[in-house]
Image (cartoon, rainbow, N blue to C red; front, side, top):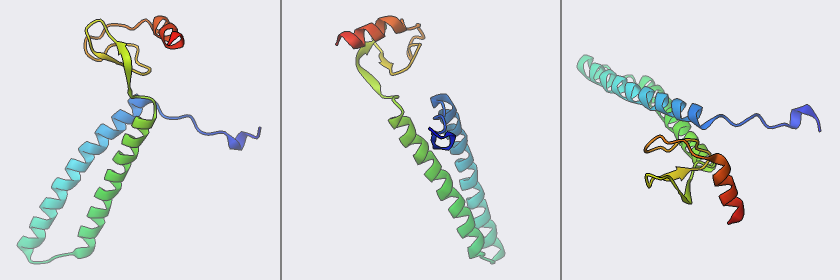
Length: 118
């Protein structure tokens, strides 16, 4: 198989979540900037439509990337298991090594054996 046909490795879920959080913070900053920009243009009675369109396009691009990340996280096997439950009662996430609620370590071998027996 040629080297150029390989798919790049999928980013880790943690990396995607960090990127999503950073993008949401950036989006909030850009929204505030857009509001301030609009107010200043109103005060000076000089509206620059091209500048507003540029800033809005940037916001739309950020929101599109956040939607991409959300879709990737949903499709990356991060759904909750139906029957795997921690001792504390919280559902286990697919691929998780620790409980999201209490922090207990999961016995990965026991879960794998349970999955194959079902």
